Image 1 (tube, one colour):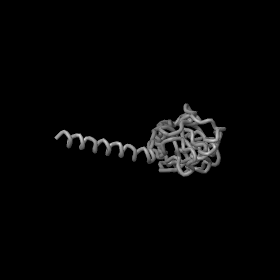
Image 2: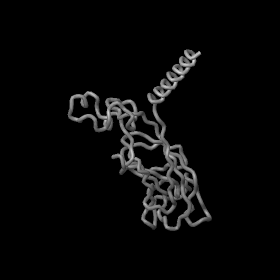
Image 3: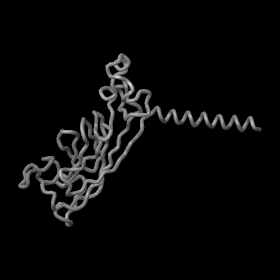
Image 4: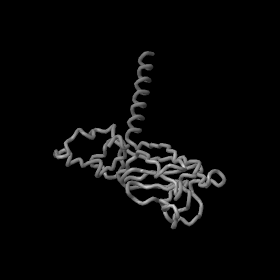
Length: 199
């Protein structure tokens, strides 16, 4: 009886280890929420720094550009945003009072309620497409999600990587060593995503 119980325990352990290994071998999905207030100038920096990969963005909520009587959602309202008496809209030509975003020093683009895919290199920032923010009320709740593979992606040009657990850590190999040159650099080849605090 003890043998069978032990065999069953061993089989269960192998199954759990196999499942954990299978999970570690595939990508991990990350998701975070951010609040973009109607009066936030110049926008909300998520703290995420993209290194060439893409994220998927969706949003809910409403911003009231004149207080509380008229409150469009993240898709905004069809209004001429190509001219302004107050200094300009972040994304001229995109709907007024909707959600816009940008990566790094790239242009502001319409995000809306999504799902919208944004990519590039640099900090991920969101804002309300309005030329006068001080009289706004309300906010958008923005969800950002992305998938990445564990490890630093040394030599892997086919996947986005997000760091440990990996076989080689960020600082474990001197970039000038022969081993590093054979593996490649995860930032250049495998693309990594991280938060500003990690950079």
